[in-house]
Length: 529
Image (cartoon, rainbow, N blue to C red):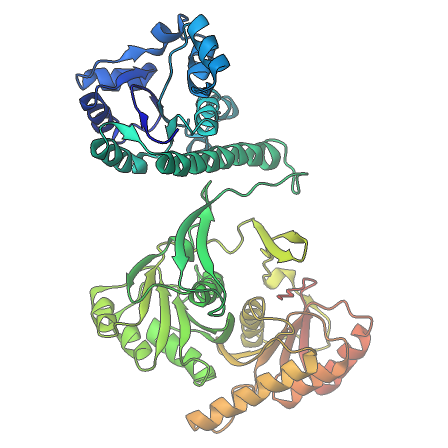
């Protein structure tokens, strides 16, 4: 069977978008419309002739609409293999008419959950009859067309108009594939709600992650790799994937990855003073807070003017003209901001290749969630790193306590270090990073690299000394030996923040006391791989 003439269509939709226009198109082709409840009412109000499902089945809708389409005269009409003599005989014997087209979209389960409905209402919004009809029609796609998305109505109507009211096998196959994906995602959302919300399971025995493709990307991390952007079907936090792109070329895989890293870090400061983050290859190369964004950008940029070229910038305030002018001084791939004023938009409009993303509200850094990583043969799943540290969480371990300024710089450096690839060392002074050491195989090298970068920044800026002098230094994990801490002291750091927990903590504390350092423990580690 290839082309199938559509003589009867069953329509039952919760989303009435485009329904009347579709019904009118079907009526033009002489299709009998069979429908249920609110769908039938909407079609009749538009002046269309509709047959109630109860008339087709001989049974009334009952039990508050829970039972209306679960009937042999519906599913027999959907599942019959029409060129099978035995199936045809069964249809004739039981007076089952063929159904050639099914148009169904399901009860809005995910939206019901998202708006905070109570449990009984959520349960009522688990569709039973709809998915059953979808699966029956999709399985029998050799004879039946199944449409689950209003976005596909136009293609269906075009196909009917161009073929005298027929559907092709190719079209039915595409629609069937989409239909099975829709029911799989729907069931996954229900299973996820039961597991995580209703039963409180952190790691259920089975996990399904329904996702919706938003875009195919030019290539992946490298040109020989293919890539696409997906979002969660059930919704969730608004982030880079939901940002509104104002200008510039389509984002690449690496653009999305780096922009996400920048947004996650700047979100740590969403309630703080104006802050600018500059990221390169998913690592921050400069971060600063100041009285205004332009000053914060200057301080962040000064940390590493070389790495900032071709970088990703994120800010925690709406962009203004002076900040946009400063950013435009060098080549920048992507700028992320909650919003931008007209002056900033005018400045960036001159930079046609710069991608400007407006995110709206920044994500909550303390939000719960899951992080996944693929490994050969499986996945690692963990809760996202939502750990937060404040002044009251710190444990003083040295004879000297940090001053107020040192404490503020410790917490600033610690926040940045959380977003630096391990082993991570971050020097900070006066609300700006002085040097960042990322991704080294030992902590001593990270401390030395960060100090070298601070000296290089001072040489380029013509400063009399690097900003590591009088700085605070953060380490994402404990110092296993005193050498890394002493390297920081040699660079000029006067205060240290680290998790603690090494078997050599006493040795490291003694070295800090001897060097006159103030050191606090967080008792929380921030490895990032």
